[in-house]
Amino acid sequence: MKIYVDADACPVVKIVEKVAKRHSVEVILLCDTNHILHSDYSGVITVSAGADAVDIALVNICRRGDIVVTQDYGVAAMALGRGAYCIHQSGRIYNDNNIESMLNERYMAKKARMASSKNHLKGPKKRTDEDDKRFEAAFEKLVEEAKAENVLDFTRHG
Image (tube, rainbow, N blue to C red):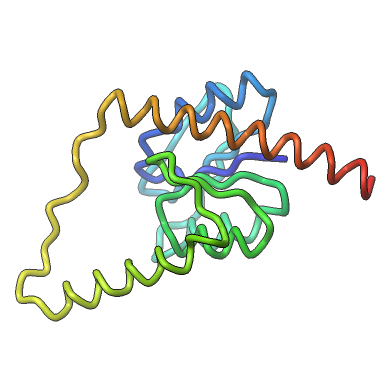
């Protein structure tokens, strides 16, 4: 099991690394050449800048039982299709029961923006300590679940 982070402008990298260290799980940060990252704990994969380059690389390398941290619903949907666990930086867990409605909401919001003469967005709200605590609690629980499932899977197939 590895943890892959869609790390371009990801506000929870340090929290991911802290939880991963406690569980001795490898972390790989993926970014493009516009967001050079360095980490004392995580591996870093830098891909060429371009539309969806990081997303495509992440989906191609994640495997069943891995954890993917991304705010992109499309990336989450593809990673779920590969058998990975997925979590949003808000702490919301993506799963087969909610991903379709999330993709539909994203589509409808984009459609509404395109129909409006006001195509600009406000941008995200400022991240709070509560946001970080909520993410850390959800991520900790997800790592524990993934580790337990991987052990069961290994004993069944190993």
